[in-house]
Image (cartoon, rainbow, N blue to C red; front, side):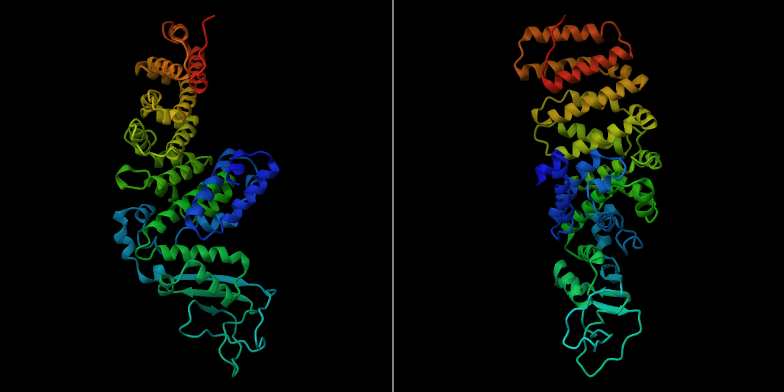
Length: 456
């Protein structure tokens, strides 16, 4: 199923795969949920900005909204996303007020709700036993209880119904057990079950000792934000994400700061969320400002510089997914007129040259993606090629092609011929922007395919 979901062929099989992935969003296993959202993010990024992409991919908007929703009762306590995933934020979590870990949920029961079989369906009590959890408080006028034993609130009663689950219940039972008890007691409609499960899961993660679950839930929320931004228009995202939480972009950018000690999986999801938010015309400037794209020691450039230095180490454990997400964000920001000038002025070119010089076999895919970014940047901005030449970019690229040729087993004569042709194309004649683009694309082709052209 996962293989089919990433291949996008044929369309019918893809739709069936997305339907199953959409069903997996209902899982209670957080690891499965993270992997499911990661897989859904791929086609969402591919079809980003296309109309009706959510319907085409069969992605449930309601489920995404439940996963992207801001956690209740923690904003008033000054708890941010960084506090939820770092050790420095644990004291804030432990000192949350008691009601922050309780679940208050309200749903509306319609009149056509089916009755559940009861011994005496006409004798329904409105009040709940005092020590029973979860509790419900109906807003409709209760019926007068009869001499029959006290039953849960009327299953056929219409109107708003409030459910309360205290922290003691959350600490003593699993998420699915609490959800099953609530469904059985209050006959919760299908469209409210998933939201209640998300509320229970978040409240349980705020309890002491659930640091791992809390980190996974932050990853889930940021991935859901990324998917929502790629699959919904700006008006929907504004009303669902950015109006309830105006500083969402700033909080996501804080997850990328090096001095916060944020785990790599959380940063990977935060980068994807910022990449999705930047696709909106009204949010691109906000994203650029949040990551300090025009500052050499800003959040974005510092993270990219650290990543480039880390991947140069053969024993580095930086996952490829993180590097790919970071390069994708930089590539999109560089494709924007203002963003491209900002990242080039902040020192992007020397970092790209450093990536090109990386000769580790396990980082070859990173070099290939970097060559695409180099081609776009040097062709799109006037001062980029001069910076590329001043930082020995041409020599580095030629040497990198020679290394790739050795890996593919090409004879030295063709390597020297290729080097001579590259120098003829790009170095000794001080190429124009057109020659510059041809030169870089020639190098990109060689690194991608390992093919070395011979001189005419």
